[in-house]
Length: 266
Image 1 (cartoon, helix red, strand yellow):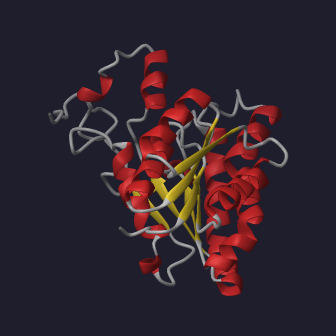
Image 2: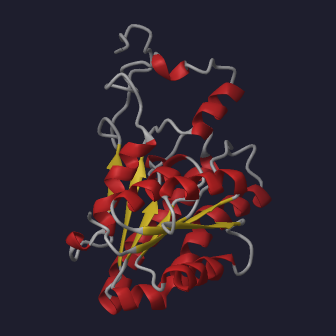
């Protein structure tokens, strides 16, 4: 088991990618602090991890002091802290016309500032463990979809944070900071968003090959599998790196505007 004996905080882990990462960390030998806004779902994740393997903290990351509470809970429950996975994020549609200052500040507060504050709060314990940080970004960090303006801004800032701290924290404290940028992932919230857009619940079964060459989109468990190497000691001195997780070269690739003639793969 690659994370044997380690303690990991995973924010936004009551569902979706965060849940999959928390559960995978436990299967790799770690104990985890589960975090999110949904208490009932969080308790279910803790139960799925097994006795003594996980604890839960429910709260909004923008709440003053919550980041310190996450670190304190890890240390008081398990005696140490080896890694932080900054996964929690607000994904919300907006463009130049619908993004006001309050909305943008809210997304930056949760998606960018909270990860910074959690790293800051965890610094002494991560230094003692020569630990690691993994930020979960998005391929939207590079430019973003037209109707994901505020979200894309927040993820672009997170990527700069990763690059900056990946250098400075490793040089000074031996703490590695890296990031993975998932593409299109089939999470519970993604299904809910598409339902709100009027699509049927099985929309993901028939996707244009231009957007899903494999005939399907990524699963949270596949993102979790890719997260583990960045948390284990075998990653060595690799820090300040960003890895895209998508089915095709995302940067510089322009799918055909008319996808009606492209066959779907099933």
